[in-house]
Length: 91
Ligand SMILES: [Zn+2]
Image (cartoon, rainbow, N blue to C red; front, side, top):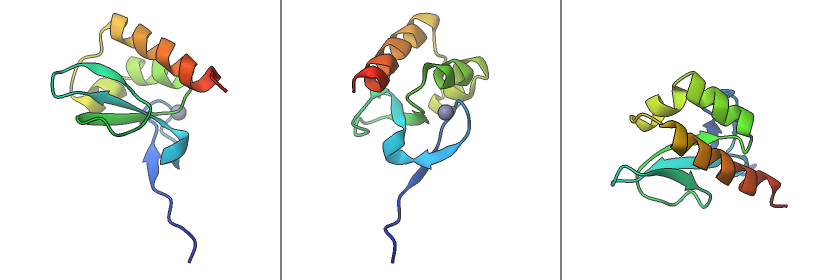
């Protein structure tokens, strides 16, 4: 039996990818929105490719705020974009 890899949908490009290839965005119980690179933070989560373009699309289409059930202010988006670049560029 091949190992079953959980798939998650990127809220930006809507492609299904392996969970390990996506980055989780989480809204904590306190209402704080941040990247969750380890995928273990409590709260409501959404998945994104480690690609700033996907973040932009997710915010523009409101898919991210729908997924988190919370508005995503510009400054939060900028923080997420910076964190995404760290995650994607930190090889
Ligand atoms: Zn994507």
